Structure formats: structure tokens, C-alpha cells
Image 1 (cartoon, rainbow, N blue to C red):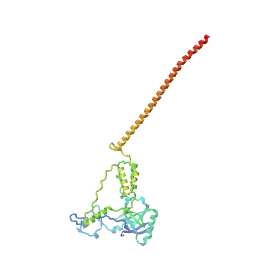
Image 2: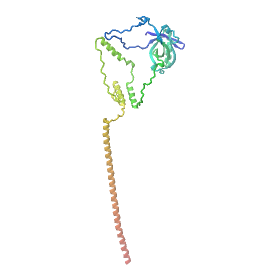
Image 3: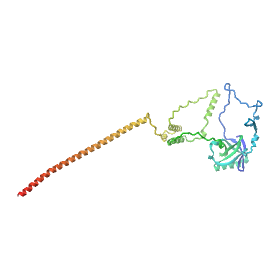
Image 4: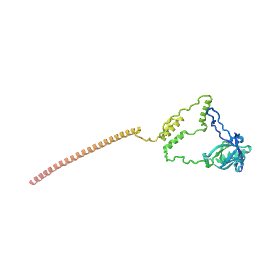
Length: 353
């Protein structure tokens, strides 16, 4: 791999000669601008406005435009002599835990290659020190006309450096979150967790650029004089009435795509649906309620009838007992005078004798 920058890593008093190599490459398809009527290339020619002629790349340099429009020439030699220690040096300024770096700050990535045999020992020392500490190195370096911030970490057996944006280059997310109060229910979170578990993890090696592949198919078809492939008609999505339905459908679709058994859907608990005047569940519920009310009323009526019968029977029995008592008293009353009369007769007989 071709290096884009040569310098050294400054690690305290240790200097490590290195070469900077791009760690990433772009596979995007680039297009040329053409004249739509005849397909001719559209080119941009570089002209000197003072001489009114086209110039070559070797004749083009850098210049800074002042506020009054004056152009101040700046040469590569001027930039190489900048009075800063990072002009040709990656200066490590601190070691911090990796989670201290906000991913928003990360920019382009580079590999740091050891610059020859003398760099092998200090290069390996820095790599192993980073491994054992579980930390990353924060460094400052100059590249392409400006000083930058970088993060050094171990990737395999090499040291990689991520360019970092300066903290003031990262914009705050003010005014982006919803400004209305939203309440998320526990059951909605449960469904979201179920969807996350169903989607699971993915091997990034299995992901690929489908857009680029589709563009390549179109290019190949047109180059062969064939009609380019047409995109399939998008499926007409049903109208999602609520978030719960969307989550449940997402969980179901994710499980079906993974070939899971339908019975696993029992893990998802459906919230009680809101009833309306048109909904069938309410009508069914109404019938059940009416039937239950009738049965309850019938039981109460039967129970009341039994109680009434029992009370009537008890009243009748009490009346019969009372009547029998009265007859007994009358009978006794009738018998008592007779005895008194008999006793009087006996007493008069004794006197006569």
C-alpha cells in the first residue's frame, strides 16, 4: 500500500519512524458529466485569468485570498516550516479509555506502518503497551494543511489511527428531540425488546452494498444493448393504526424470516383493545353480561321463593301450634269446673251424714 505521509510518532522521548497509509477505500461508482444531446464529455479547463490561457497542474499552487481580494501565495515549503511540533510528527499527548471517545468525533482511518528496521522495536513496544493498558492514545498531527486530532489503537498486529474532529466541530443536537411529552408504556418496551432479540446480531462480513450491485447490473445491461432491469413494484404497506400493532407485526415478520416456529409468538402479549360501538367484542361481551344477569336474577328469585315458602310453612306450623295450645287450655278450663262441682257434692254428702 502506498503511503500518503511520512513522519514519526513522538512517544515521550521515544521517536518511532512511521508511514501513514489509508485504512479504507471507496467502492462507490463514479459518473462523468456528459452532454445529454450527443454524449460528449463535459470537461473543466483551468485558465489563468491574467494570461487568459489554460495552465497545467505543475503550474498550479496555493494562495490565500485576503479580505480585500489580494491573493497571498503559500508554498509547500512555507507549510513544511510551520513552527509547530506536529508538522512531521504524530505527537501523543495522553492515554485514555476507548469509551471516552465519542463516535461522532471519528473521521478518516489510517494504518501506521513501521518506517524501516530501526522502528520495529519501538513500534512493537507502543503496540504492546496499548494492548496491556486497554487504552487508546490521543495524538496531534498535521495533514493536508491543517493540524488534526487523532486516536491510536491496536488493530491486529498493527497500529491504526483515526482522525478525530475537534470538540468544537461537533454540533450539539439541540432542538432535534420531540418537544412534546411522550409516555412509553412498559408493554411497548417489552415488544421493542422482543423485536431486538428477534433481529439478533449480524456478521458484518455478510452485509454488502446492494445499491452498487444494482447500478453495475444497469451498466452491464446497457453496455450489452439490453434493457436495464426494472425494480419490482413496492409492496403496498397496510396502514398502521398504532405502535403496538407495528411492533407486533415487526416481531412476527422477523421471526418468519428466520424460520422460527409460529408458536413462539405466544411470548408477545397483546394489550387489551379499546372497545368501540362498532367492535364485535363489545357485542359479544354485552350478550354474556345479559345472560349472566338473567341467570343471577333467576337464582335470586328462586332463593327468595324458597325463603318465602319456608317462612310460610313456619308461620302455618306456628299457627297450628298456637291453636292446639288454645284448645288444650279450653279443654283444661272445662274440666276444672267439673272437678270443683264434684268436690262440692262430696263435701255436702259428708255434712249430711
